[in-house]
Length: 520
Ligand SMILES: Nc1ncnc2c1ncn2[C@@H]1O[C@H](COP(=O)(O)OP(=O)(O)OP(=O)(O)O)[C@@H](O)[C@H]1O
Ligand SMILES: [Mg+2]
Image (cartoon, rainbow, N blue to C red; front, side, top):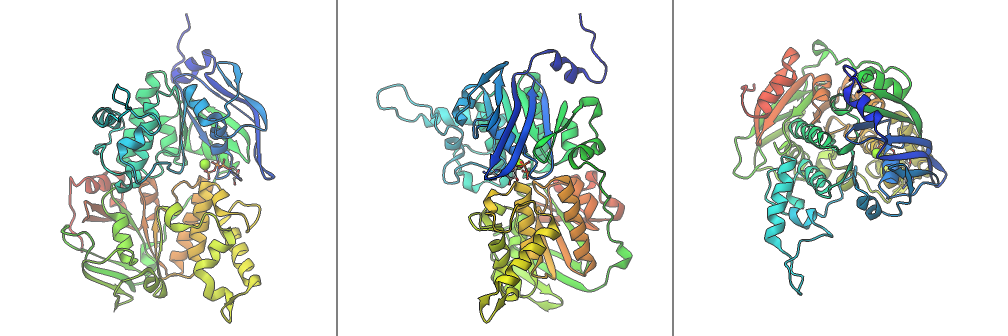
């Protein structure tokens, strides 16, 4: 009999078994870009394998090879040791491999239940093949309960928050009875509470013998869920960590190849007293709670926390003029500001970098250069004509400044990796020179190295006197970056925290509504 090894039981015991699925020496190129070179990875039954690596390292590509979305140029995919040819996603699904895409793939105009059963609808017995909506709704509720999502299966997916959509997508894959479930950044749009729920679900699945492959840039989370970690760097294997070797620092070293500088917040005492933006009883939800009041000074970094659905994005969109303001007032540099349109906000130096980059932040079918030029036309034009020299200069500077990984400024934004798309969104607005910059989930899907760069950039901008409002569901990030944190709960300003009071426990108490702190 085998004696269990203390502290490393799962990772050790799974290695005794043979891998369920493996990639053996796979390579994949896209138009000359070597996304993967001779990469191997083994997935054992019941393990939670995390794949980590910087933006563009090849994680999603590797997963797409395992899930039949792409085919390797060379190398093999093996299932239970036998080479297989996965020529499309249904081949993979038939073999029990389900992939949850990094960018959501749900149909907004269909109901939750329709999305769950898309392509395998439940039918009444009989010749007419009528849809059995009741059965789908009942089964749908059960499937949703598995990921702790409490919504009516009959509502349109378009009405759900990004966090809820993500859970639907996860529920759908679970219901395909996958034996290997690949989650590509499943929590990037989930709140802390929803992420915790997912971590719990993953634990349960793994105990049932389902393998979970987990990709995330949130290293705290990786540490909690993973029984083994595989690293990729520039499209190649960068190493493997057994469960007792997994730590924040060991993961960073494997991904980046060096240690990163620690971020330090600007000092409170150095802040100016200029109030940049002030909200007085601003109402943004019809029939909702009292209006919201707070101030932010030049150079300050204000974190905005709350659960998904607390109204953070809605409040930011109201400030920016995308949604109507339903009462109260807003002052920009002491002057009353009637928000009405994003153009008005931009002309006063109030900018919003949105949460959902694919829908609002970028034009995916245009090049990086064109995306960067759009909001900056004034500064790169002469006599109403775009000056190609200035345009190139702007894009090259931005690419360099944010470390966007691309072969050229003319590459279509849609072909960049997720994190690099996010950097382009940021670069686009930074070049405008904002006074108040609202960042909604600025590092969603961004790797540790790039995160550190974005934090440096935020701190740099704050140093130049820009007032920064940062909405984030990443608790670690809110705590690390913000000098002050406001917490929303069901559209209401539940409280404000500063200094040592900014910690996970206090934020959660406010976010869940179990406590309230008067503001002002
Ligand atoms: N369909 C495609 N066409 C062209 N290039 C692609 C395509 N898919 C990926 N690439 C390129 O392959 C490389 C690896 O991308 P991939 O999406 O696998 O990275 P990733 O590790 O998942 O990054 P992220 O953390 O940002 O999601 C990148 O340079 C990317 O631009
Ligand atoms: Mg990816």
